Figure 1: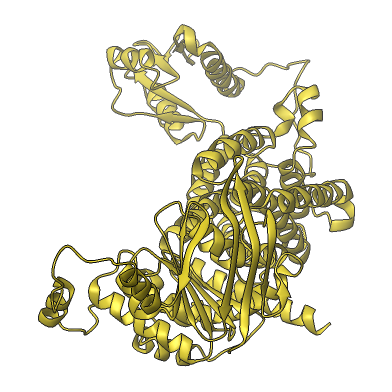
Figure 2 (figure 1 turned 180 degrees about the vertical axis):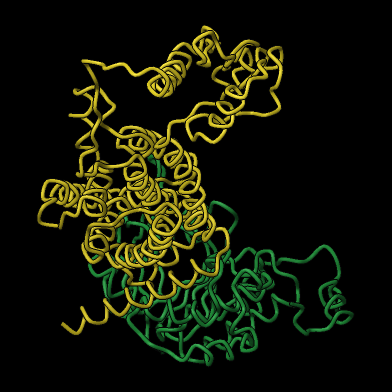
Length: 252
Length: 371
């Protein structure tokens, strides 16, 4: 049994007398990619933001790497990396400077070029952030989130609005982050993404976790309940056709 | 101790990158440096023009006498009268006066300057002016009268018992430009300290850039300090250029010490920037930032002596406006620059700047929001 890095107990968040996160319990293992799924308004982002120390907790507790989040938010900030939904950077700032600046926010000095090489932006080191495409900004953002060697990495719907090539590339990068020993916790709308990427997923609805297991087990459980698809499953999807025709190479 | 060193390293890197960004951004350079320069040229010209009084006149000479021609050429050379040679008929001159293009008309009638029985040239000059130009018209008459008296003296010796003698004192007083210049410096400090942050911060919040920084251990004081330093650097460059222009183009006479001026300028930028940080840091978006900054900035621009000196105001208003944050900035800079005072001698201004500095930053820290 691997080590538990994140422990959420009876977590609650109330907006306008309504519990948007209602007594959820959750444990995430060290080194896994954990997905939080659910329709809009299910409480995914709020949960994530409470773990990131960006929202106050109205009930229950969260501990990350043994540190109580409400008691030591500053200590938590030093060990987490956060990828926003749409990464944005200030204009007229070179990519190397963006890496240096974020490292400096943690009081660290890093080799910016190495971090850029890792996300295939080495050649763009002297470009400004505004010259990057959406996919490139995502990659830069991942590099930025890793400058301080975090223990946990949070992504909020990271592939929304990306083209199929950029999505696949981002999946590879997320796996790379995991392979460095960083625990990845992400929210997503895309179920194919969760199935492919996540070791385990929690499905949320109306502020509660309604299922929690590996994607494979969840599917097995559904089949055991006698579920049958109305239509025969095709051997390939339109997504496969698109990638076959346009290739996997990044377009940006 | 080690922690503090690390935290100051953060400030240093943020300052360095923030300053570099400013000098790469053409729009920022325009508003931070060129825009105040344009104001300096415009107001500098106006202020300089005021120091030499002159009248736009038309001279109509209907006489053929030698004396009249001589007089007209003297008027043309005069610095007080700016003559327009195109206005050579009475009709044209009257039109120009009605339109307010000239202040008056000097008319030399046909017989002017003819030699009389005593072998002396004589005649009467008419000065024509409209109702709206009474003061100019009378001044022109007085000036010509004085000139004619001098000429009369040469022809007819009369001993006058009463005379007026005007004498220029050696002490110099402040010129209009001295007031204008310190006011314009105040205006640029407002531009750097307030207009910058109130435009930038809501945008940074909208894009989630500040929020992202908030996920790091970065503290508000570090972010403020880095902004203060980089704005001070760009501000000193901008104000330095204005000093060079004022010295070279408008012949500003500096009596003070540059180190004092530099220190006071930086303190002033810090203090005024606090207002920008408070508004920009508090506002969630431009719609909140714009009206609040207008409420705060416009009264200061008009009441602190930015565009017109405060001594023109009624006494009670001077008393009140003395305590606005921008007033000690402008007064202090003028005293240091043209009055030859040092920082100790401008204690009241320096003290007021420091008091405002504390008040404003206490507010700015309290209202700051990362998103």
